[in-house]
Image 1 (cartoon, rainbow, N blue to C red):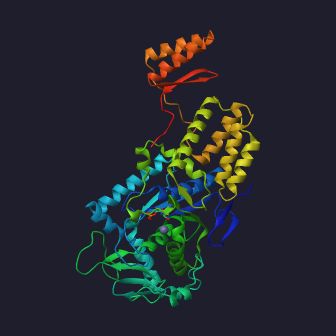
Image 2: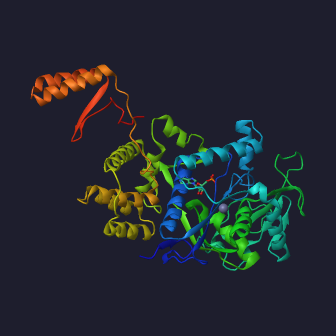
Length: 464
Ligand code: AMP
Ligand code: ZN
């Protein structure tokens, strides 16, 4: 079952072969650290994690690089408006550097809480200014740039095939350009270097051959991916919003400088919507992972809920949906725990699972195979071994999960014991009355083949 992946560049599902086996170079556009990540952003990183785990599952080694955008991402994709870091500074009253550090750490903590495997290399835009300047200087030498009063721009008309990734109708865009072009020659041209304003000093600015300023957003990814993965590597990933501008411009820069296509595969995760509305950081009132935790949810329930949708489909977040995922996850955990020791893997189920995974990461179907396995009549030990194998990709942490032990007060235990005696003697009214007393004391009792199971009332229920 070869791995097949949907490549946005060719708009087709293609067989995946690493350029330099067994290593796969993977670059994922990271967060802009002017605020916390919302659960929409995190969906995109969960998708990248499933991609990475699927590559590992197929026996490849993955060199995963993720950048941190801590300068240069402007409020508008048309290279107007201020740097998002500046809006963040105003909101938080912190320095740009402190803020970047704090939000980077918060982001990384969220990824850990979601069992997202840590990239091999994290790279910050501000730590790679020299590489970005060298890149722009080379583009200048090759004749791809021009200067305006506010920066150095990339001339997209100089590049044959500009906009291919997004199937942009460049001529149509140019003709219909209502936006104020300013000094830009073409609508699709974009900033490589922006000058600092003349009337004030920015917190983040650097000297360059063109004047004091800061790099544009797109150049960081071309410069850092080339540094860590080479000029043509296996897979580049990001969210669907990156197709039209950010990735289109990354490709343009790399092609202009090196003549290569940048990445062999382009994979894009589709958006999470909040009750049908697109979630965005700038909207202000967004849901963070911490919001879910504060409402009593386990972060892994969010991970589990994302497995229920294909990464190339938008996912509508609802609290009811999350409740469902939390309940199903808890059932699954208890079930897997109760199976005891793992035995031999069932190859038939393992093959079915791998087939779904390798069919462009069809996680909803892979999860369906998992439930088939749970309901199957295989021996518990085979179920356990096979499911733990699946969990290398699902990342639910099933091998480590333990039921939370409830400390039950002695008087409740006595009631439980008396109820057991009543049941043994078939004194049903007495048994029911004792159950009532146990419940009045705040405990629930569930009769299982292994004997009564006692827990605090409501403990199994995750409520908001
Ligand atoms: P940003 O921090 O804004 O640069 O975004 C970080 C990542 O989250 C990018 O890969 C975006 O494409 C992605 N993203 C932004 N909004 C959403 C959303 N609502 N759902 C899924 N991914 C998103
Ligand atoms: Zn990028």
